[in-house]
Image (cartoon, rainbow, N blue to C red; front, side, top):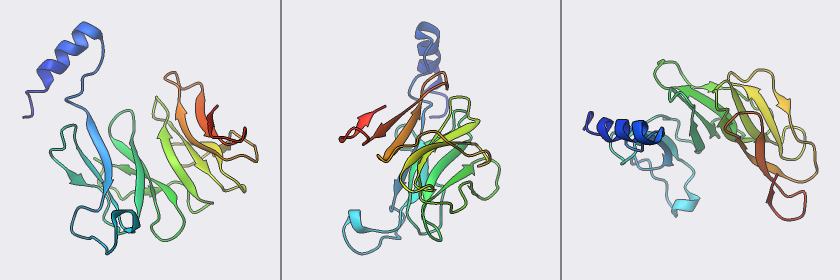
Length: 183
């Protein structure tokens, strides 16, 4: 199970210069560990962050706070996960350095409501959406939460940033034109 995926991955890398799927790790949110709350799935208030192999095997729970945790994303080096958590109040962005043994870091520190973190391609910065200045705008900060910089300034809702492969541009969804469109 450990070595079998490496062979097709190596062939795929050699022939197409692309990473294959079998070594891919997933991160997802679930209430699967018996801490289910009453009501429908949509109304349950507790979801934890998990990681697993691409085929769902080797699942490992990453959070244990019995709060709502969502929108988890891997860092490019595969050593950290950024996610949103409502632990102790408004939604904040946390970074878990999976192999360090250290507790997750709250990198937005309860300044506004913070959502949809995404690592830059080089892993040094995180783009996110926040209403810290009134309405949802796009911000960028260093991976540790320092040097927060606002990128958008519009009365429309600017949300869901994503980096270009080069890391020089950020696309996002905005309602500034009336309907949700990509900018």
